[in-house]
Image (tube, rainbow, N blue to C red):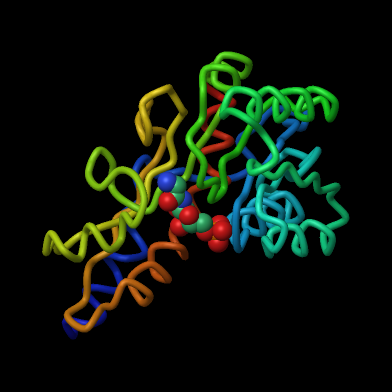
Length: 217
Ligand code: GAR
């Protein structure tokens, strides 16, 4: 076995906990509200997992905060309603989060999925959906919290990175870990190439994390 294929095996198998089969959720579809700031590839992964019957859920609404976010285009393609709430239009983080809560309630959202949401959350949102907010982060938490996690990992010279899906609490990128995937750092990796491989794993574990979180209840 070449070194490359050894690495490949590690890349595709190191997910913990290992989820044997879908669908894991009950017969009642979970009502998701997805929040995204940018590209929305994780939104897409959740939408796909639902469409293929792997995840028993429905996306009630996408909330996005940047007018040019590609996530909104993806939502339109999937026939999902998208609501732009631009944080620049609000006086405080609390006021902004209050508006988000109102929208999520209007759309009868049960679970909130932070899929590349790049704003800090306040207790206004966290308390309104206590233990029902899931975040995906591109590192093996608790390492490399905050922004530019992949760059932080490269700068630290770590050899294994990954991604984490976790329940959200007030401290940023903290809260009970639901599932993690490990990804090896390759010698020629740039932040872009490494992030791209991490994202492949994000797209696998985020739908699984949603199912796992619902099973905890
Ligand atoms: C993802 O890599 C996600 O882990 C990260 O933003 C990216 C969004 O990608 N989130 C964070 O860094 C949050 N701390 P996407 O828009 O293609 O889903």
